[in-house]
Image (cartoon, rainbow, N blue to C red; front, top):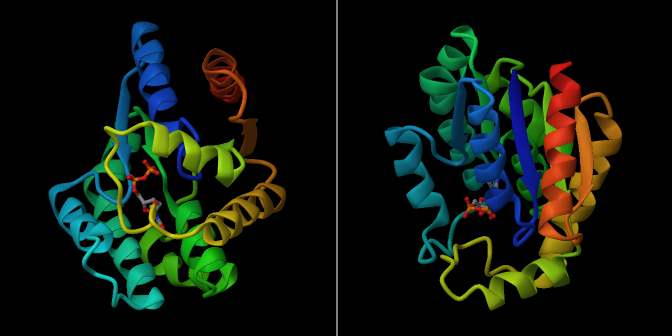
Length: 205
Ligand code: TYD
Protein backbone atom coordinates (compact mmCIF):
# COMPACT_ATOMS: atom_id res chain seq x y z
CA UNK A 1 0.00 0.00 0.00
CA UNK A 2 1.37 3.34 -1.12
CA UNK A 3 0.01 6.40 0.72
CA UNK A 4 0.94 10.01 -0.01
CA UNK A 5 0.20 13.09 2.08
CA UNK A 6 -0.20 16.43 0.36
CA UNK A 7 -1.07 19.98 1.30
CA UNK A 8 0.08 23.56 1.44
CA UNK A 9 2.50 25.14 3.85
CA UNK A 10 1.50 25.05 7.51
CA UNK A 11 -1.26 22.47 7.07
CA UNK A 12 0.04 20.36 9.95
CA UNK A 13 0.71 17.54 7.51
CA UNK A 14 4.18 16.59 8.71
CA UNK A 15 3.16 16.47 12.38
CA UNK A 16 0.11 14.35 11.56
CA UNK A 17 2.21 11.92 9.50
CA UNK A 18 4.56 11.19 12.40
CA UNK A 19 1.65 10.32 14.69
CA UNK A 20 -0.09 8.21 12.05
CA UNK A 21 3.07 6.21 11.43
CA UNK A 22 3.61 5.65 15.15
CA UNK A 23 0.02 4.42 15.50
CA UNK A 24 0.29 2.03 12.53
CA UNK A 25 3.56 0.62 13.86
CA UNK A 26 1.96 0.13 17.25
CA UNK A 27 -0.65 -2.00 15.48
CA UNK A 28 2.18 -4.14 14.11
CA UNK A 29 2.35 -2.84 10.54
CA UNK A 30 5.67 -2.47 8.79
CA UNK A 31 5.74 1.14 7.68
CA UNK A 32 8.36 3.01 5.67
CA UNK A 33 8.09 6.76 6.25
CA UNK A 34 9.74 8.91 3.63
CA UNK A 35 9.49 12.33 1.99
CA UNK A 36 9.86 14.25 -1.25
CA UNK A 37 11.96 15.85 -2.41
CA UNK A 38 14.39 13.51 -0.69
CA UNK A 39 14.26 10.07 0.86
CA UNK A 40 17.61 8.79 -0.47
CA UNK A 41 21.10 10.35 -0.35
CA UNK A 42 21.03 11.32 -4.05
CA UNK A 43 17.47 12.66 -3.79
CA UNK A 44 18.39 14.67 -0.68
CA UNK A 45 21.31 16.24 -2.56
CA UNK A 46 18.92 17.27 -5.32
CA UNK A 47 16.56 18.60 -2.62
CA UNK A 48 19.30 20.89 -1.31
CA UNK A 49 19.73 22.43 -4.77
CA UNK A 50 15.99 22.93 -5.32
CA UNK A 51 15.19 24.45 -1.93
CA UNK A 52 18.34 26.59 -1.54
CA UNK A 53 17.21 30.20 -1.00
CA UNK A 54 20.11 31.52 -3.06
CA UNK A 55 18.88 29.74 -6.23
CA UNK A 56 16.50 32.54 -7.18
CA UNK A 57 17.47 32.21 -10.87
CA UNK A 58 15.99 28.71 -11.20
CA UNK A 59 13.71 28.32 -14.21
CA UNK A 60 10.31 26.68 -13.48
CA UNK A 61 11.02 23.81 -15.89
CA UNK A 62 14.43 23.23 -14.31
CA UNK A 63 12.65 23.10 -10.97
CA UNK A 64 10.09 20.59 -12.31
CA UNK A 65 12.83 18.40 -13.81
CA UNK A 66 14.84 18.38 -10.59
CA UNK A 67 11.80 17.33 -8.57
CA UNK A 68 11.19 14.56 -11.10
CA UNK A 69 14.85 13.46 -11.00
CA UNK A 70 14.78 13.33 -7.23
CA UNK A 71 11.51 11.34 -7.45
CA UNK A 72 12.94 8.83 -9.91
CA UNK A 73 15.84 7.94 -7.64
CA UNK A 74 13.49 7.76 -4.66
CA UNK A 75 11.11 5.36 -6.43
CA UNK A 76 13.85 3.03 -7.64
CA UNK A 77 15.94 2.99 -4.51
CA UNK A 78 13.32 3.12 -1.80
CA UNK A 79 9.61 3.12 -2.67
CA UNK A 80 9.44 0.13 -5.04
CA UNK A 81 11.65 -2.17 -2.95
CA UNK A 82 9.53 -1.43 0.14
CA UNK A 83 6.26 -2.02 -1.73
CA UNK A 84 7.63 -5.26 -3.17
CA UNK A 85 8.52 -6.39 0.37
CA UNK A 86 4.86 -5.88 1.34
CA UNK A 87 5.44 -2.81 3.50
CA UNK A 88 3.21 0.24 3.81
CA UNK A 89 4.95 3.25 2.29
CA UNK A 90 3.89 6.67 3.54
CA UNK A 91 5.36 9.56 1.63
CA UNK A 92 5.26 13.20 2.73
CA UNK A 93 4.55 14.73 -0.71
CA UNK A 94 4.84 13.00 -4.10
CA UNK A 95 3.78 13.57 -7.71
CA UNK A 96 0.73 15.69 -6.81
CA UNK A 97 3.01 18.33 -5.29
CA UNK A 98 4.72 18.71 -8.68
CA UNK A 99 1.32 18.97 -10.36
CA UNK A 100 0.12 21.64 -7.90
CA UNK A 101 3.32 23.67 -7.41
CA UNK A 102 5.08 23.45 -10.79
CA UNK A 103 2.03 22.63 -12.91
CA UNK A 104 -0.50 24.95 -11.29
CA UNK A 105 1.29 27.65 -9.31
CA UNK A 106 4.39 28.07 -11.52
CA UNK A 107 2.13 27.90 -14.57
CA UNK A 108 3.73 25.08 -16.56
CA UNK A 109 0.36 23.33 -16.69
CA UNK A 110 -0.83 20.29 -14.75
CA UNK A 111 -1.04 18.04 -17.82
CA UNK A 112 2.43 18.95 -19.02
CA UNK A 113 4.00 18.24 -15.63
CA UNK A 114 2.04 15.00 -15.36
CA UNK A 115 3.28 13.87 -18.74
CA UNK A 116 6.88 14.81 -17.99
CA UNK A 117 6.72 12.85 -14.74
CA UNK A 118 5.67 9.67 -16.54
CA UNK A 119 9.30 9.25 -17.53
CA UNK A 120 10.26 9.29 -13.84
CA UNK A 121 7.39 7.35 -12.28
CA UNK A 122 6.56 4.87 -15.05
CA UNK A 123 2.97 5.27 -13.92
CA UNK A 124 3.46 4.62 -10.20
CA UNK A 125 0.51 6.29 -8.46
CA UNK A 126 -0.48 6.15 -4.78
CA UNK A 127 -3.34 3.93 -3.59
CA UNK A 128 -4.40 6.77 -1.32
CA UNK A 129 -3.62 10.48 -1.26
CA UNK A 130 -4.65 12.50 1.78
CA UNK A 131 -4.94 16.22 1.13
CA UNK A 132 -4.53 18.43 4.22
CA UNK A 133 -6.52 21.35 2.92
CA UNK A 134 -6.11 24.75 4.55
CA UNK A 135 -6.50 28.37 3.51
CA UNK A 136 -3.01 29.67 2.73
CA UNK A 137 -3.53 32.72 4.92
CA UNK A 138 -4.12 30.44 7.89
CA UNK A 139 -1.29 28.05 6.94
CA UNK A 140 1.26 30.83 6.48
CA UNK A 141 0.22 32.33 9.80
CA UNK A 142 0.89 28.99 11.49
CA UNK A 143 4.38 28.92 9.94
CA UNK A 144 5.09 32.48 11.09
CA UNK A 145 4.03 31.53 14.62
CA UNK A 146 6.29 28.49 14.54
CA UNK A 147 9.64 30.28 14.81
CA UNK A 148 11.72 27.10 14.96
CA UNK A 149 10.61 25.91 11.53
CA UNK A 150 13.03 25.98 8.61
CA UNK A 151 11.94 28.29 5.79
CA UNK A 152 12.74 27.27 2.18
CA UNK A 153 12.66 28.82 -1.29
CA UNK A 154 9.02 27.89 -1.92
CA UNK A 155 7.80 28.97 1.53
CA UNK A 156 8.86 32.55 0.80
CA UNK A 157 6.59 32.82 -2.25
CA UNK A 158 3.74 35.27 -1.79
CA UNK A 159 0.12 34.53 -0.91
CA UNK A 160 -1.21 34.38 -4.51
CA UNK A 161 1.29 31.58 -5.26
CA UNK A 162 0.04 29.55 -2.32
CA UNK A 163 -3.55 30.22 -3.31
CA UNK A 164 -2.81 28.73 -6.73
CA UNK A 165 -1.22 25.71 -5.05
CA UNK A 166 -4.35 25.17 -2.98
CA UNK A 167 -6.72 25.59 -5.93
CA UNK A 168 -4.64 23.09 -7.93
CA UNK A 169 -4.69 20.49 -5.17
CA UNK A 170 -8.48 20.83 -4.90
CA UNK A 171 -8.76 20.44 -8.64
CA UNK A 172 -6.62 17.29 -8.49
CA UNK A 173 -8.83 15.85 -5.74
CA UNK A 174 -11.82 16.22 -8.06
CA UNK A 175 -9.91 14.72 -10.96
CA UNK A 176 -8.71 11.66 -9.02
CA UNK A 177 -11.62 10.98 -6.63
CA UNK A 178 -10.73 7.28 -6.31
CA UNK A 179 -7.46 7.89 -4.54
CA UNK A 180 -8.04 11.30 -2.91
CA UNK A 181 -9.40 12.04 0.55
CA UNK A 182 -9.62 15.73 1.45
CA UNK A 183 -9.35 16.74 5.11
CA UNK A 184 -10.19 20.19 6.44
CA UNK A 185 -6.86 20.94 8.13
CA UNK A 186 -8.15 24.10 9.81
CA UNK A 187 -9.87 21.83 12.34
CA UNK A 188 -8.20 20.86 15.60
CA UNK A 189 -5.15 18.63 15.54
CA UNK A 190 -6.93 15.69 17.14
CA UNK A 191 -9.81 15.75 14.69
CA UNK A 192 -7.52 16.03 11.66
CA UNK A 193 -5.47 13.12 12.91
CA UNK A 194 -8.54 10.96 13.46
CA UNK A 195 -9.89 11.69 9.98
CA UNK A 196 -6.57 10.90 8.33
CA UNK A 197 -6.24 7.68 10.27
CA UNK A 198 -9.77 6.64 9.38
CA UNK A 199 -9.08 7.26 5.69
CA UNK A 200 -6.12 4.89 5.86
CA UNK A 201 -8.04 2.25 7.78
CA UNK A 202 -10.93 2.42 5.28
CA UNK A 203 -8.51 1.94 2.41
CA UNK A 204 -6.79 -0.98 4.10
CA UNK A 205 -10.20 -2.63 4.34
P1 TYD B 1 9.34 20.82 2.80
O1 TYD B 1 10.03 21.67 3.81
O2 TYD B 1 9.59 19.35 2.81
O3 TYD B 1 7.81 21.13 2.79
P2 TYD B 1 6.60 20.86 3.73
O4 TYD B 1 7.08 20.81 5.14
O5 TYD B 1 5.74 22.02 3.40
O6 TYD B 1 6.04 19.57 3.23
O7 TYD B 1 9.68 21.43 1.38
C1 TYD B 1 9.23 20.92 0.22
C2 TYD B 1 8.81 22.04 -0.68
O8 TYD B 1 8.89 21.61 -2.04
C3 TYD B 1 7.39 22.50 -0.44
O9 TYD B 1 7.34 23.91 -0.52
C4 TYD B 1 6.62 21.92 -1.62
C5 TYD B 1 7.65 21.84 -2.70
N1 TYD B 1 7.46 20.76 -3.71
C6 TYD B 1 7.22 21.11 -5.03
O10 TYD B 1 7.11 22.29 -5.36
N2 TYD B 1 7.12 20.11 -5.96
C7 TYD B 1 7.25 18.80 -5.64
O11 TYD B 1 7.15 17.92 -6.53
C8 TYD B 1 7.50 18.45 -4.27
C9 TYD B 1 7.66 17.01 -3.88
C10 TYD B 1 7.60 19.47 -3.33
